[in-house]
Image 1 (cartoon, one colour):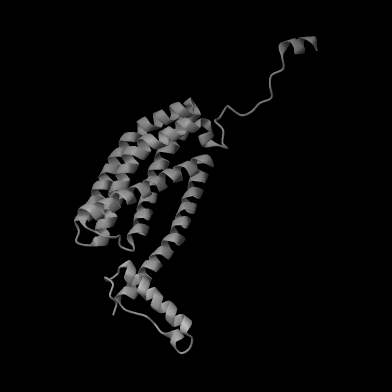
Image 2 (image 1 turned 60 degrees about the vertical axis):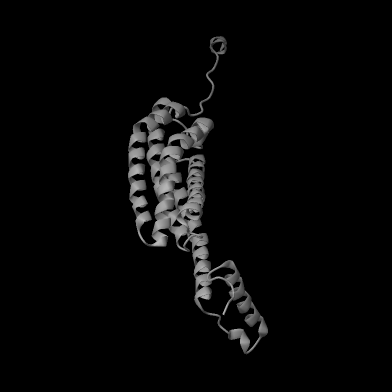
Length: 239
């Protein structure tokens, strides 16, 4: 029996300490198993952390490859992935403040972080692709800056309406009597609103304006390939 509160850090430290002590005691105590609700919760949390550290890099790597092939650029996928990660961490931080100060949840469910990451990366990249592919098409006609303005004008209403609708859908999960679903719904709702109203509207266009044509490196705008300098007319006449 532990003196610490159930599933608290003190209880987890006690379980880990017991396991370490039995493992170091040698035979026949080395094979002793420490069970119970706190031990189960500790193992569940460790498994969830392992899954997050394994799956999250794989998701980001696959998304990077998709953006690399689709946009034919190296700089653009890196910047777009940074905006997606920024949206995830911002929504996670805002949700944690809301959980602890308004909704009364002391911590996240073990499976919430991975599912929220999966949803926000998928939705964020979807909006990124919708905006930047149109910007690439417009860039071939009018340049990087004017192309992004035209793409934002064309896709902005669609992205905003879709984002608000998805945020409302995930907000419905917040009224369900299941803590994990409530937390996922709140995190994704905040993340989608941030992604729609701030990142896709302000941050991504600002990055494109600052980077200029380097945003599409190493691809070049059609008609701007390097050519040999024209021979001066005077030299041609002398020859």
